[in-house]
Length: 80
Image 1 (cartoon, one colour):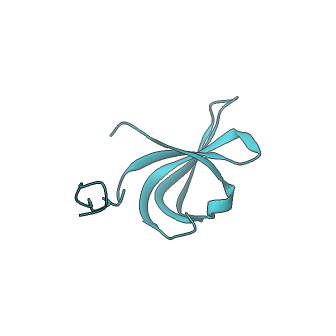
Image 2: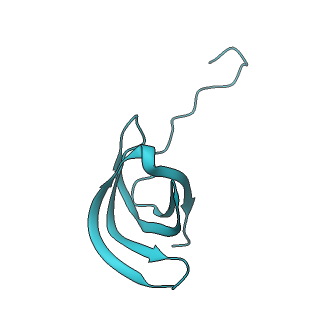
Image 3: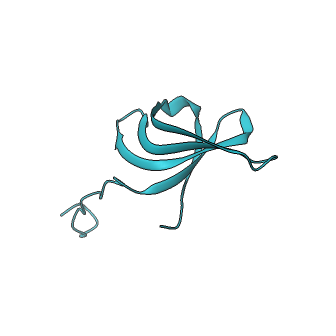
């Protein structure tokens, strides 16, 4: 137990979770995919990744990618 009397809960890793990622300084481009790995720097490995252009609505499949944590502004869960 911790100081507050509550037991520590294990953090459930968001593996295989479909997400949309907002990129730093690229407000018109979002990356969507499923998280298969991450590290302490918030670098993410995504599969089934695609680029979604918000103005035109265009979608481009890019497959498996490594996305550096410093480029991420927001991670939003997508409906499964």
